[in-house]
Image (cartoon, rainbow, N blue to C red; front, side):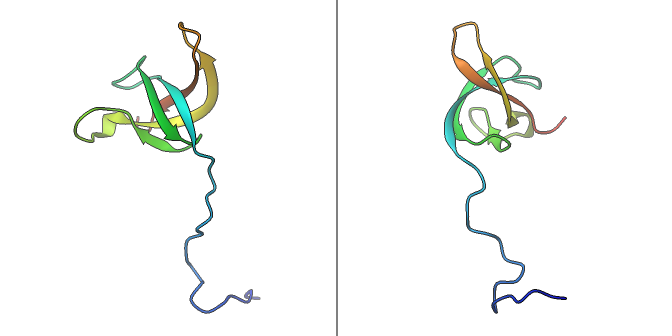
Amino acid sequence: MDPVVAPGQRHQYLTTSQYQLDERQLLLRGGARDGLRWHATVAVGQRVFCGEGEWAVDGLYVVTAEEVDDADGVHRNVAVPAFA
């Protein structure tokens, strides 16, 4: 049984945000930028480019729900490389 769908709405993307974007302090773990700190407006589970200059795959990280306090006492989310 096929549900009733309004014309023109089948197979379209939802416009509602599924993520809560917040300003986050990130601690990068792994990859080329291991140990660096970064700041971004991003949600847990989203990818973020952490780098200066041209975009490169090694600068793409995924923000995790893991939270740590760094040596300076700043609360940070851990971000891991998007591609291993």
